[in-house]
Amino acid sequence: MSSKHRGKIQGDPVTYQTPLPAGGVKLETFIPWTLIKRGSKKQIITPIDAPQEFLEEAVREQRLREANKNSPLIRALGLAYHWLRLLDEGRMESITEIATAEGLDRGQVSKLIQLSRLAPDLVETCLTGDAHAPSLESLIRRPIPCAWDLQRDQLIRIK
Image 1: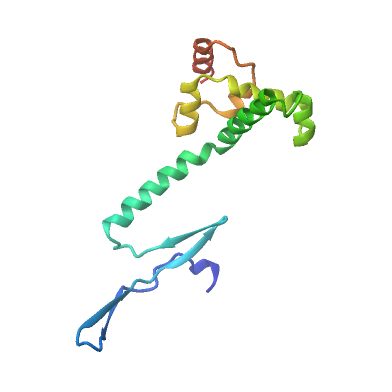
Image 2: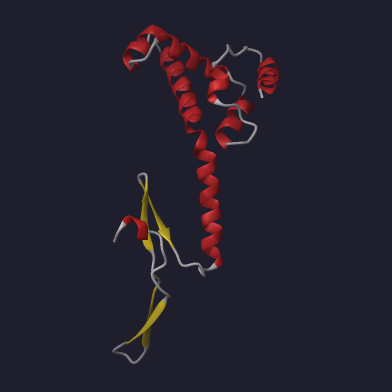
């Protein structure tokens, strides 16, 4: 099948009746669909007249995908807390040692590790994919103040 035909409906659902040895009838329904590869994911394309449950599930999955759009910020937050834990436990001596181990510049590591000072409610808005969540670029562009009230004020002014 050529790539331009992927995702098209191939026909109507068909139900087959197969007789059973005990005298009953076994019903099998064939619903035509096509697997579509988008990136590394595979999606199932169903006919247009699919049941309502499929539509609700598709809407839920779309919302999850939209919430995960801010994944560089989520990854940066995870790295910041991981590096802070390495420093607290004494497994790494300094930011310079972390930068050497990660193969990054010391300045990048110091900018990312300051994300561990974010207020808990700001971290929560970043993780939930809220529309009011700050972007990674706006967070690492300038120093983050230690006081949580000042952080909220500064991030509101940035938007």
